[in-house]
Amino acid sequence: MSTPKKYIIEHMESEFSEWVRLEYLAIQKDVGLENFYLSSLPAGTTDADIPKSLIDNKIQWTTCEVTKFAEKYPGFDYSRVCLLDPSADQDICPEDTDKFDFFLFGGILGDHPPRDRTGELRKYGFPGRRLGKMQMTTDTAVRVTQLVVEGQNKLDGINYIDYPEFRFNKMESTEMPFRYVLDAEGKPILPEGMLDLIKHDSEKSLDDML
Image 1 (cartoon, rainbow, N blue to C red):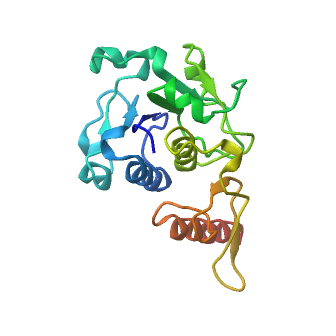
Image 2: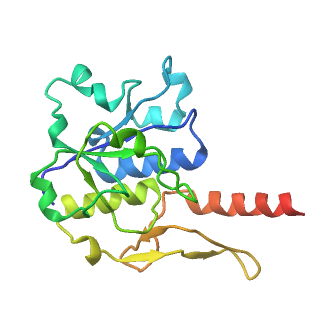
Image 3: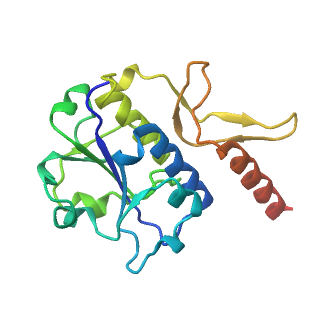
């Protein structure tokens, strides 16, 4: 891989759901704790407001918006920031590794149906790149970006699965409406603990229907 890049997520939620917690832990594991930042946490946030597992893993967080990062991190170069934007006019490519040092993700990409959370960042003029047409979870979006700019893989050369079905037993299964990267064994890459959470949420939804 090339020189490690920095990955920033503008945290556009008022709190940390279990889904988000697992995704952030997976991202930090993939890119390295020194290369992952959470920005725009609500004013007044303290360590006590952040899940203990994230604090224990020394996650880097700030209430500062990415548009003010130069004030907090001297040397931060806005011209070297790439916004991952579904509305961008070009896809991310291996050559972008020479153009950008920071890759910025707006909020929770895994909304279904997707909301234009990235629009709040687009207005600041960051250069944008797409990750294809399929909706991804946030950890998948970061994983794909890293595979392209650090691993020098073409976007359409990565092994994906769309709308995978996770079967828990003969009677229970759930289809997830996202694109995932496949591992060496041909299985969707999920954050540790996510499959149990999907199963739990599926059972809860079924209980709500009955």
